[in-house]
Amino acid sequence: MNKNELISAVAEKSQLTKKESEAAVSAIFAVITEALAQGDKVQYTGFGTFDVKKRPERIARNPRTGEQVSVPEAKVPVFKPGKLLRDAVEGK
Image 1: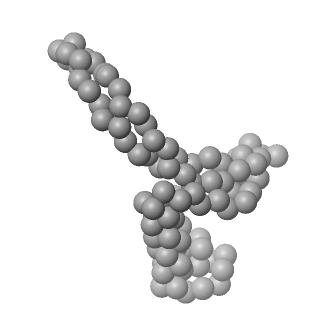
Image 2: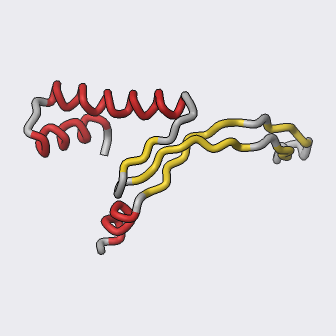
């Protein structure tokens, strides 16, 4: 499902116009993005949790040359699905 398909599905389920649905979907993703950028966790019970994890600095190897390179520390977004979402995907 791409962005346009998501907006159409939201419009159909919520009985909003496509323009209103696009604004709502964009606002939801903007709020999640801003919260994660500030280091906050976003939890929607039953669906899942968006969080930020810190990936420590590490030494990696360039596969072409075999040379060791340092990979800097990074913050990465992660998603942990909730029980209701896991059960829906499994067909329970």
